[in-house]
Image 1 (cartoon, rainbow, N blue to C red):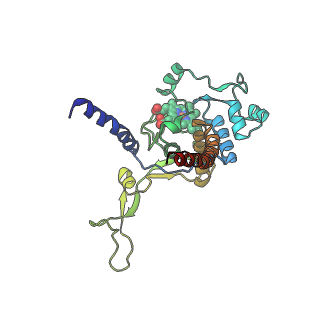
Image 2 (image 1 turned 180 degrees about the horizontal axis):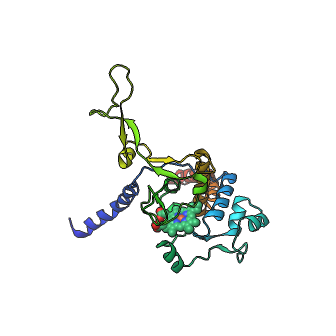
Image 3 (image 1 turned 90 degrees about the vertical axis):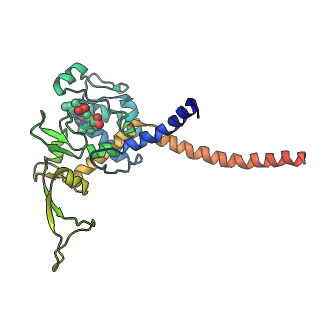
Length: 274
Ligand code: HEC
């Protein structure tokens, strides 16, 4: 086997390696099913984004006009209540005024543009998980850390909504050598053992606990806020997805219809050649 063939074989299998690497996260991702038909959710996501994220993260591959049109937001409402950059026009790109130098000085790292973020991370699940696993960590410069992105240089922008989460140890059922849960012989109650950090994650438990009364929303309401944000970023990563899928159905219907005539024509041709 020559070198060329070997190279070709490696190249063919490279993409599958990339997919395999995608699943390599420190904690399992929580899945979310985006729904681009849910305009109310997309509108809420856009509102949260423009209120809480836009100061640091631009959406510079998207325009306000397109967002307003696609999400069914009246232009004057959008300009008055959702756009806080006084120099921005409805036709402007969704940029912000944070310079790279300032960002580096303030955070030690530049907040990335998030227009294509969900595409980059292989879907909105990563984002949905990332925004829900910030926790208090006094050893970090900003006082927070993140289970999915260790030593992240971003403050938790929604801490007032979610509340403070702390890393704790929890009592969970002890496992026997055969992998089953251990129970007391008479009553059959599970035998508990205290576990912390990675051991909890490996057993499928969250090592985080919400400090009561520190957030304005319940955990369910907060999850909904992040769902809407993830849905919105799923939209910005590919704004014409809905339209494309709609047209795709017509194209397939047309092909099916066209097939009948092509087949009839083909039959006509073969008739003559016999
Ligand atoms: C005060 C500035 C600031 C605000 C506000 C902010 N971020 Fe960030 N964000 C950052 C910085 C800085 C980073 C880079 C972190 C790093 O690389 O360590 C970042 C990184 C990220 C990342 C990328 C993580 C990765 O995988 O690389 C995401 C996603 C993100 N932010 C989402 C948001 C969302 C959503 C909001 C609004 C709810 C928000 N951010 C608000 C500063 C901010």
